[in-house]
Length: 141
Image (cartoon, rainbow, N blue to C red; front, side, top):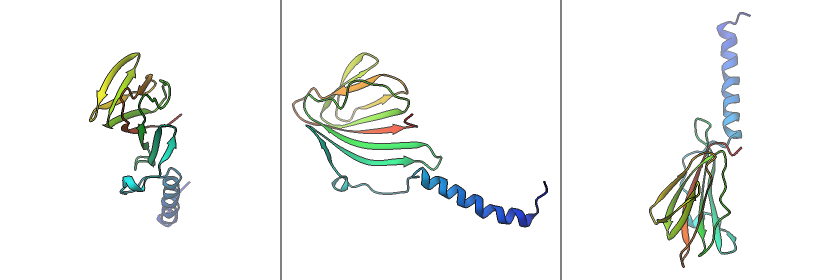
């Protein structure tokens, strides 16, 4: 099939619109400031979660960030594994982090990387709450 420049000129806006619609479907993240006091708190027993964002980068790569305050002696869930990767950044308190069956105690300022399909989990061994961020990278399934 032969296309003229006129045909191409008509096709380009349609392609641009389709691309924009795809970005909106994936919730492409835009520049934004997320103030702590504006993040809705979701209590769960002694724990509190705050969703920060959940969307995609300009390359359509899924990315999600949440903040958790974990009560003394609490774990968010049993050790588990999943396809997406996670980076956990401990802001306050301490956590016992288990990766692949090995447990390490971390303190504020520490960072944990959990690779795809690697079993991991954490628990707050302290007497005060521990607060951390989790950055999830990649598709959830």
